[in-house]
Length: 214
Image (cartoon, rainbow, N blue to C red; front, side, top):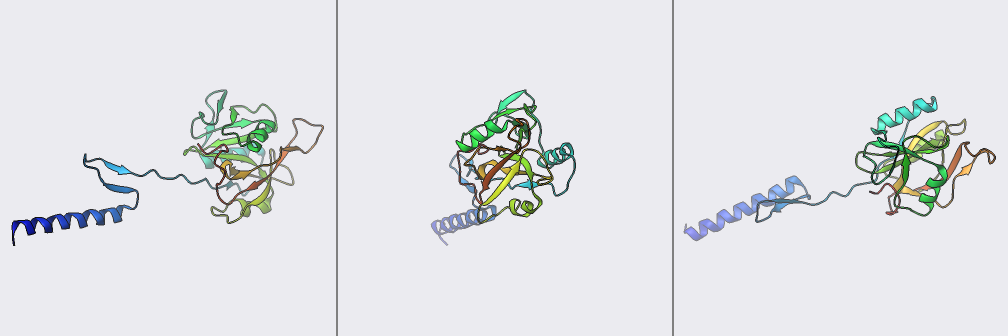
């Protein structure tokens, strides 16, 4: 066999080996660049799945259970924007401010370490930077909000505090929420009383400008 033929076969074998390695490592790994550096395509972050605690209890205990499940601790500063808050943390936002941000699709939220009102909503910023809105729901909503893949949107009522009607705590992804109205006070005369958000929970994250997409 001539030297040129041998070189051709060797080069062909190397090419096949590289192609096989690419198949084994999946679509994210590319062939090494001339300088020897392997380029990796960015991984598209998917929206988080809604989380619920399927047991009743005191409000304080339920919030503690959900924070543990989501791996978040309180903000280290008195206040922060969602975009600059540390990952793995939680804060609070008053209903009116939250309503304005969601209705107008504001790209950020102002969070406080301690709730300024008794009906403040809790926000979780997960380890991957995505956001969850915490509230209380009726039992029959739990199997509807928690599936990872939801083909159609559903209408949900998310309360700021637990009640006989909504005793179960849940956290829903901000990026999947479609909000067209402000929260409603259950007792119009009590400004610090529980409020309710009536909103759509989408099957896919198709609203890119809402909080929780950073």
